[in-house]
Image (cartoon, rainbow, N blue to C red; front, side, top):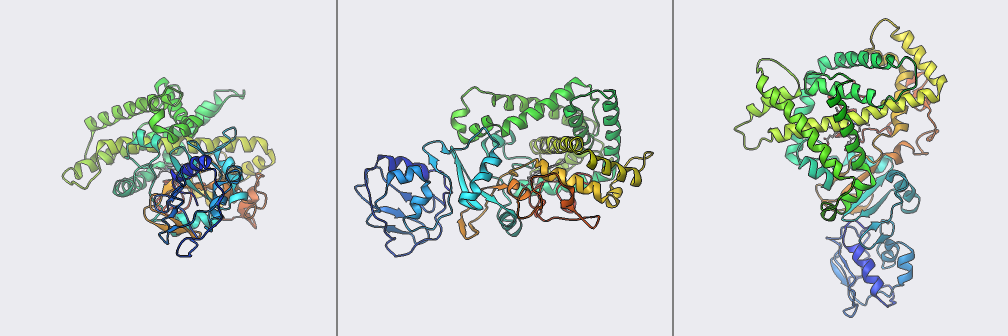
Length: 507
Ligand code: HEM
C-alpha cells in the first residue's frame, strides 16, 4: 500500500525512463510480504538506469529482490501503481494512480469527500492518496474507523502536521496540538467548560431570545439567515470564553464572523489544499489563500485585546469565564517548567473554540432550517411535539430532550445528512501499528471518511433520504452506532461530542 510520499512518484518517473520488460520474481528469501506500506521503511528503489537491476525491498523481510522484474510501462501508466507492484508478489492495499509531482489526481469539481467515496468500490475501505507532499491513508466504513479511533485510540490520538493549521496555530491550542500540550489543554478546557456549564443552558436560552427577535425584524420576508445564526452561535461561545455577547449589528463582531467563516472556507478549498500540498512553493506565491493569514491576524488581534482587558480586570476570587480560568491557571503554574499554560496557548485554544464551534454548529442549524422547509410534514410533527412537551409559554431546557424522541431523531438526521465535517479532522499514528492487516508505520496520516459511514447503504435503511425513522424505534429515540458526526467517541476530539463532560447543550 502506498503510504509514503516520495517513492510512488519516484517509481512513476523512473518507469517512464525505462525501456525494459521484466518477469516477476520473488524476493531473495522467497518471502512475499503481505504489506508494503511505509516508504521510508519499505523502500522500493527503481533506479532510472536499471543497469544495477536490483529492486530493493526493505520491507518486513528486509532483503533485496534479485533479477529485476520486467514490467510493462503502459500497464503501469494506464493502471495504478499498486497493481504493478502487486505483480511483484506483494499483496498491497491499493491506491489510485499517482502522477509525478502532483500525486493523486482528484477531480476538484466535486467535494473531496465525494471524490474519495468513489474510490472505495475500486480500492476497498483502506487506500492511500497523495497530494503533493502530503500522503493520507483514507479509512472508510464504521468498522475500519472504529478499529482505528476506538480500539487504537491512543495510537491515533495525534494530529499530523498540516501546513496551514501549523502556520496559524503553531502547534498550540486544541485542534492541532499533540502530546503533552494537547492533553493538558484539553483536560483543562473540558473541566472549565463543565464548571461554566451551570450557566451554559441560560446562555443558550438568552441567545435564542435574541435570535428570535432578529428574525422577527424581517417581518416574514425572505432573508438569508446565515450570519444571524452564526452570530447567535458565536455569541454563546463568546459568553463562555469572554463573559459577554455582542449586538448582532456590531460591525466589528460581524466583520470577525465573516473573517472566521471565510477562513474556514478557504482552508477547505482547492487553494487551501494546494497550499497544504506544496507549502514551500505556495508560501511565496500570491493567491486567495493569503486572506487566511490576514483574517487570522485580525482574529488574533481581537482576542489578544480581550485577553489584555481580562488581565487588567482579573478578580482571583470570582469564577469568571474561560479566559479568567485560564489566566488563573497560568498564574498557578508559572513556576512549573512542564506547564504549557501560557498566553500563546490561551490565544490558540480560545480561537479554536470559535473556529471549531461556530461554523459547525451554525451550518448544522442551517441544514435543519432547510430540511424543515423541504419536508413540511416533518416540520409539523416537530412542532406538535414542541407544543405538547414545552408549550408556548416557556423556554426549552435540556431536560425536555428526553421527552422529545421525534425532535431528537430529526436533529440526529440533520447531523447525519448535513454531514458537517465529512472527512473528520486528520489524525496521525504515534507508533507502528496494523490496520485491517496492513502495517501502518508511526507518523502515518489518517483521513477518516465520515461520509462513508453516514451514507453507508449497509447501515442506513434509506441513506440518501432525509428520514428521521433512522433514529426511531417504537416511537422512542434509537441510538445508532454508525452515527458519528463528531467522529469516533473515544477519545472524541470534538469537545461537543458524545463523551462524558462534553459541552452540554451542543448537538
Ligand atoms: C454540529 C456541531 C459540531 C460538529 C459536527 C463537530 C465535529 C467535529 C469533528 C468531526 C471533530 C474532529 C474530532 C476528532 O478528530 O476526533 C471536531 C473537533 C473539535 N471540536 Fe467539534 N463539532 C461540532 C461542534 C463543536 C462545538 C460547539 C465546539 C466547542 C465550542 C467544538 C469544539 C471542537 C474542538 C475544540 C475540536 C478539536 C478537539 C481536539 O482536537 O482535541 N465542536 N469537531
